[in-house]
Length: 259
Length: 297
Image (cartoon, rainbow over all chains, first blue to last red):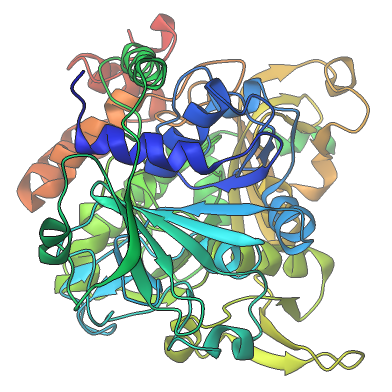
């Protein structure tokens, strides 16, 4: 059975979620993965979107973070101040699941600017909810496509904290939670070294070799001595994901939801 | 007295929004006051400080038409599609004029509206840990908790001159009912000096529609309530029409190029008298996919 790199990324990201976990979900790739988890092995996962929907059960993937679909089938819908203050800052979120434009070796995230802040070469959308998700959730997972442009040696701007300068820098900063414990890409999975906190390649997807991953990384990527190959998608996972995308496409009048 | 709350959108924008004002058009992907945004453009309001958590199409329009000199925000993009090009052109290339920006996070903007509504001078939160944002925004500062010594972020309350929101229903006394994703609709209105609410429908008495604990803004805290069916398009009004995802996608091509953008705005916004005219004009090009048909002919 054939599958795409993006499907591998989404399915591997989905597998990380356990039933019953409380997950604060970013739009796009994280949302696709979190809903795939809910529709497969984790039916009781609690999905929270920053638009205030708690226990969201969308039948199709939302295009925006506040589609009516999210509110329609949620356990409850609260205001935006409440979602950030009582639910996120209040310490009720197990996993913050984020996308990113760029990350560095310490899993810091940039979604603000490329180039100098005052005269950016590329103006990105900005912070949204991420800085507080990254420093309040018990742990954080990041999912994005791996290229030299997205995995950079030095970020022009840290929007949301990973492990900052590495080592104990995050702990000293006052951030709560364990920080980014996994980065799931279309090539493999990275996790922080327990001491230096530098991202280490811990798994590659089937058919991907380490040199490919190194070539798509803007720094000298360290590779775990226990490197594993992720298990291929099952037919059930693929069927469920493709159904979800097909439903989404129909519902959005030909527009795919965040893939 | 109370019946004076109901007015046309033209009158409300004319009398309540002035050049140089700080104006917050809110709606967190839902109930975005698009019709009011168009009216601000038609009346050529200038030098506005625009405040909004998620600047998207309406602010792209106002910025591109030269109405704004400053933007306070936390996420600027076309949700699910990509960049908003007029916003980027203003920041990256100062077109049509420079746009000063003040950038926060969502949690912070929400807290700042709450502080504004509460009559407090600042918002306090556990925020921006490790982020570069405070280095570029002097309004993000840190204080020590007087009880625990914890370092906390604080930012000034937002008290806009004018808040503008869309909602589902109002009654003849101007009491407004909001349901679904309520965002910061209540906070922004209570934080602002003046407020304009556009609604889908006018009903006799809101009490017949609101369950206990519903989000209701009493008419006496609002400045003007305007009946503008479809006024949140291309966002949505839960219970009335869905988000027009195809329109958001189409906006990318319309706004990417300066001349295409100006011609489109000229034809559909400046060239129409009101939002009903806009709907007819845009529907004629097949660009409206979600509004009830009677609004499009």
